[in-house]
Length: 338
Image (tube, rainbow, N blue to C red; front, top):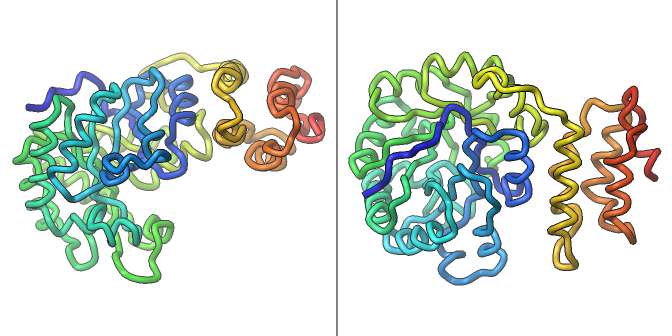
């Protein structure tokens, strides 16, 4: 039996491979206290077969609310993973039915499961029997020729019968064929917000979250007139402080001091940086906070790459963040530090 969620889906950050890791989620939580966050997707086999790098993705901060995204097609394995995930204190388990990558297709998970709604329902049912956590599903609107509202309606109807009450809908289909990689699958299939709106009308009792090419606070507000929540992705990677702009609009929160957030994140880096991790594992997420300053392109490149080769990376990062004159009149930060 799954629990009712006691948090809001009004604003979510999408699970993104290579982005929504432990450190990025910490930065985002400094900026927004209410946004629902998600981990990168982790395949069930990686957790159960004790692959150390993937197990590290189970680590978390005090960053509630945060959901853990699982990939897989074996109901029994997913149920076992759910227990492990719950033991790490996550608030939700999200099942990935949207990833179109070759790896996902070869493992029969992600978007290819869209053609197997009965199996998805069984997976969700097994997960719900093994954990008290809510189960949600992130999916595309269709795949290949299964691209119409009637099939999508049947898919949601079947999966929701297992107790799933929340669907995150990426408002385009996935193309599962050679030559179309995940990046192209985020742009080539046309966006179709109307179909998501129509699904909400068909299933008013379900939580319907819209996702796909949503980049501005005013766009978030507009979508919320039609659905229960909005999930944003790449826009937050490019500008993490976008969350504050959206929070001001939809929650009437106060504007935050960007420099203060960066300094607090610096203290987090000091506490967690060690010889087993690269400094850029932390600073690659901070780099985009420098957008808008003269020379910021060079600064971001420095924080994402060159900082690894500094003998005293913490000292260099401290100079970059704490020297007040670097922030005056949008001066060239990179040249000041180098």
